Image (cartoon, rainbow, N blue to C red; front, side, top):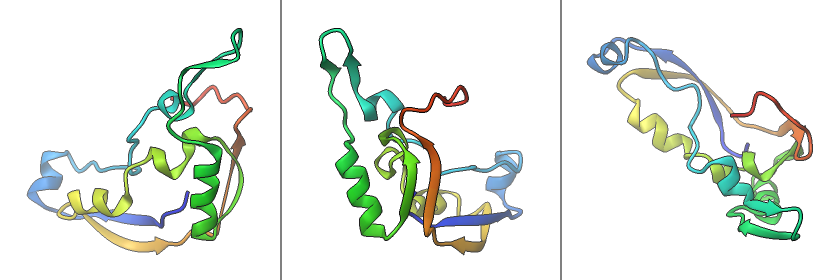
Length: 119
């Protein structure tokens, strides 16, 4: 949500052959959704497990990057994902970056919206 995105092209290499010419489709998560949001007990009104990411953390990161954010919950914040440069470095022998895109805005379902396709 705050980092650049890239459009990649696969390249012939021993690495690409080993992965059957498949590659990443995103940076990947470093923490699960519940780890980010915590586990809240509605009956007691307390957290069973404290959240690791807060709304303030997420919005501070988005503001610092100069991104307009609409919707989103902390489970999709930048703190939940690997850093793209590190991921690209791991795959440098099997992909070529064709385009780099700098985000100016992000729109996604709000934190209170049910998404049956979330993992």
